[in-house]
Image 1 (cartoon, one colour):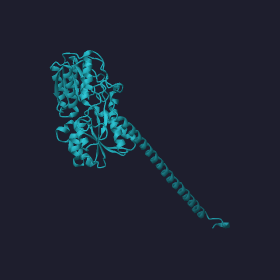
Image 2: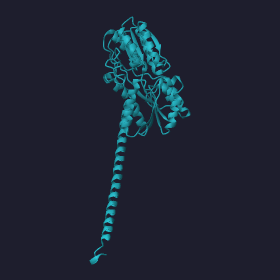
Image 3: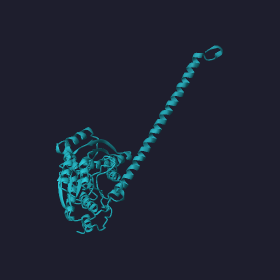
Image 4: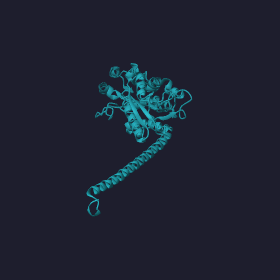
Length: 397
């Protein structure tokens, strides 16, 4: 004690220090409580957002099971006689190119035209030479199946100078923002996909959105996705954009890895090892998203081997081969795009060009399918519209 019974200066200092410590402790405890409360609040908000993402995905998936088809335009548009066209396929070994290319060839025969099929054999370096071969053959029109304008830009300029009509299926023109961004395109016309097809990139994005929504719904918004893609194709850049955006917005499912494959991987034997290596790097993956049928059948399913069916797989456009492995339980779902219809629509579009009229709505769309929805007991999927008969009637053949 100090003079007069007062606390000494040292005792006062100790008292103030204790008070500050107690106050600091209360402040720290309060901060911890506040932090925990904020964390709990954010976790609750994230959970609520993820739940909303799940509910939205479930609604959109049910809509996607109904399909994105539209009534076909049945306006009479008589066939222009005496035409000769070339159909150039990215590679007939891939059903993703083969089915629409064969569809175009069948339709050309039905409309009464001479048609030659050129096979790019999945070698992009061969595509320009095939276009030049068609130009030298004096064809009236060229249909590109799964070959973007940028891949054959110079020979398409030569085709334009020769007044040869050019239509792309599964292809984007050179003036598309992701397809090259040129000031002007080189395709003479494009398929009519109805009002939504005015912005073709947005339409193709929505295909990827449907794939993502199915995965979110089926996984209760807890999917960990290995995303396979092939950046050689502009179409896949758009589907990936729609897919990725939808997964991110779900606030629950995640893309744990993105694996870029190429057509070269199919011919050099690297596809299966690449997928297997990526799966080893990401054992947490619960879903695989395939870019197209060919990658599903020749890459993903062989890579999984005996594990096929233990990891969910969103397949590609649902060709017969892909539906067979879905029926066998080796993949989970596909987003069926009736590519033969696309081939017929390309010939209808070409006929409109020859007639000097605008292409009409093809009615073409897609439909989501799994074991319980839209998969026939056997064989290929046939859309609810007899598009072949509708086109023949419109052409008067």
